[in-house]
Structure formats: structure tokens, C-alpha cells
Length: 235
Image (cartoon, rainbow, N blue to C red; front, top):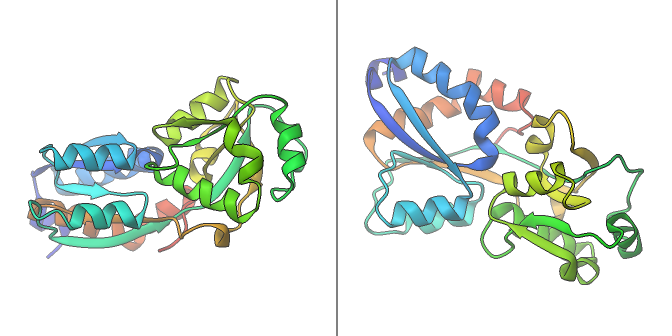
């Protein structure tokens, strides 16, 4: 049964990681045009989304920016997961407020020079997936000691980007797709090796039968093509 047949004219609510907003702004209208239904999307940090759903917010679909938060929600006995699939992967990138030369990510002195007395913006290291991945990378590069006292932590990747874009910090760590979505005020400095942190995966959970069609839609070849065009990697 096609998505259009099974979900025609349905309205669903999706809670999605904020890093998915640029691509979902493209995908949601395509889904709505095909099904005749409506999709309401709440974008926020993954931890915030989980907390809201656990507190009773109605959600048909949850798309996480990491596996652990998806597992946490799936283990909630008050919820029934109808379908689950990893829809994409991502990378971490160091960005700056001004154009910089190359920076050796494993050199603490170069970090200090690039920060120039300023701070490094990352997601909350105990809750926001991008912050969790960033800390793992900094620890494995042996530069956590050189940077941990210079952090400013944000509740989402969009918050990190805003710090950098406004020039409030010289450096930030975000997803590659977020850096690609910004046309000015943010410059890529260096791409982190994917082996420096846990795999950055986006599990999509259908929390109602109505949401199953949207999760199916996210896995389709045409949808995956758009995700790849926006800088995501194939699951």
C-alpha cells in the first residue's frame, strides 16, 4: 500500500531534531502534496523533544539525532513504537565566525590560538547529541583539557550556529549539514574524522499508525536523494 493510499488527508505531528529543519522544509511539502495530508513539525534539541513527548505531548513521529535518545523513548512503557528506521547519517565540523587558515584538530596550542581568548560553542555535552559527539571527539583528540574551560553550551545546534553567526564566539562545533545550510557568517574550518565519535545516526520512530507512513516516506529512494543532496550520508 502506498503512502498516498494509506495516509490520504491525515494530519500528523512530527518532533524532529533541529538539525533536520533545512531538509524537512523541503521534504514536508512533498509528503503533503502526495498524501493530501498535513504535517506539523516541532523542531528542537533531541533531549527537549524526548522530554516533551514523555510529558504527554502528542507526537506521531519522533526523529532523533542519536541512537541513545531514540532507545530511551522506545523503552518508555507508556509509548508504543509502530516502526523504526535510521534515515540518515551526519558528520561533525568545526566552524568559525571569520575565515581561518587550517587548524590541526589534535593540537591544543592551535585551538588556543584560534580561540584567541574567546569561547568554543558546542551543544550541551550531557544532553544534546551534537554536544555529546563533540565532547567524544575532543577527548579522543586529546584536546578536551585545552578546551573544556572555554566552552559555551547551547541547547541545540541552531543555538551553536547563532553564537558563531553573531560573532559572539570565534569557533563552534556543528553538524556538516548545518554548516552547509548557512550562506554567510559561518565558515568551515575542519571536518572531524567520523571515527572520533559515535556514529551520528538519525533514527525515526513512528509512535502511531498514522506516523508509520511518514517514516516509510523518509526511507524512500527519492527522499534519500534529497537528504544526500543536503549533505547527509546514507544510512
